[in-house]
Image 1 (cartoon, rainbow, N blue to C red):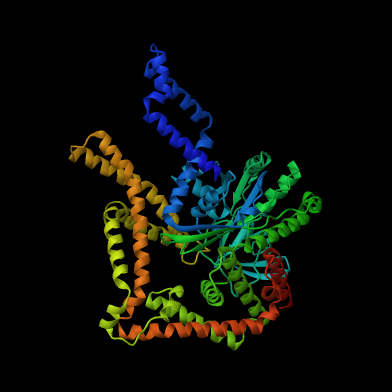
Image 2: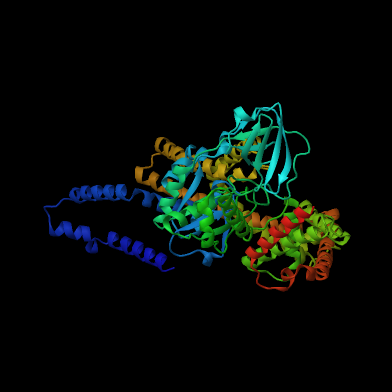
Length: 636
């Protein structure tokens, strides 16, 4: 990277001229002009620095926060991988449409993996939070008032019944629709996150809602349920700010699901992204690319997890549909929904979408068993999507009753996963177990194992990490964990869409650490100042070294944990029962591989391009999948 090289050279050159007085330009200037004193230059420099900072404050804050967030990601994530960066337009306005799986960390990952200067749409509720709101202001975000943040409980109960393919009739019991609702408001039945827009109100007990955003796989409530009212909010000012940024060539980051969640599929998308894109085309003649961003997390809520940030092919508006948008009414609704469907297809093309977490685990395990060699991240993601889409098609072809062969294989894969978790080892370690001998007793096993080096390395890592971990990382880590668990429970109580609310945990840990870590350093500085005879420069050097010591402690501790995981299979061999289970794993894995590949060879040809084609247009595949699901729904 030539920019990084230039920065390095500039820093080294600066150190050089500061270290040698004979080539220091300031020293030379003061020597030539003795009437000029050092404080003259210092005062002038302070004035100029203040002027530059004030005039370019937002740009400097953005740049500084980006550097800060890079350091946050390097601490809290073991690896951040980027796929499809070539799909990002290099110039001009862009809308980034992201899935929302890890609260504020999602925005940080997009910010740090993209060269564009991005302004986010952020919920007004989050804008008002300390730290989050302060950083959002510095990043030039646009606050949005969300209807769900001010939802109120409706009177009585409702039942939903399909009236037309795009509308539901709502019948109320002890309701007061005319006094509590207006056309344009939304209602949300208990047990679902889908808000339905009110189209007409016939009486206090009868109304009609638009059902175009009701998901095909979501059944209607069988009995009367309570409901929430989401009042209509005028977002005119928000759209004006966003369109102004886009017209000036800026980039907008938006999370069209409307809120963070820990589900394995997308929530119904809000229409805002479509309205923004059409408004830009109508007012400024800009057909803005909508780039899908897939944030794929592994151990998302845990420390030192992994994330794959995947950028997909942009979606553009068909200019021929602009006239229909301008007509308003039903025509506008249709073209906006069509664009929203295309955006959803593109977003699903960069994530691995499954109906539930158990299915996602089966997909990942099946991919590891099926692949014959280590694959690049992009190919792993592609293979994961093939398995997920294959599973969907298998369920659709069998009308929800998959063949016995698959059910047996799925149960075996789940049992294999459970066995790995019980023994505390990973799938990649299993092939190596076939090279070990298990017929020895414990003492012989201990002598024959390659443990001395690994155990010594573990002790070395523990020794190196002990001091920084005990004094810098451990106190903050424990407090942050307890705080995140408390916030998770609160988020779960308040949410209609979260399953376990794991999506909020890492964000809460990061926010607390942003406050506690510098506070801890200041605390140590006060102790050193009051209880030691060290001078100011020495104490300052120690305080400035604490970030380095803390980060070294994290890296070394992680290396030690990797060693412990590698040693665990050998240690488990000391126990007879575990030894027998470990000895069976390689053959179990080989049997699963053979059975899985045989099953795929049997059913694969039914899936067409999923089985035969090397390069797939995942956006088009998702479009076909959505169309097939709609056809099946109509037939049923």
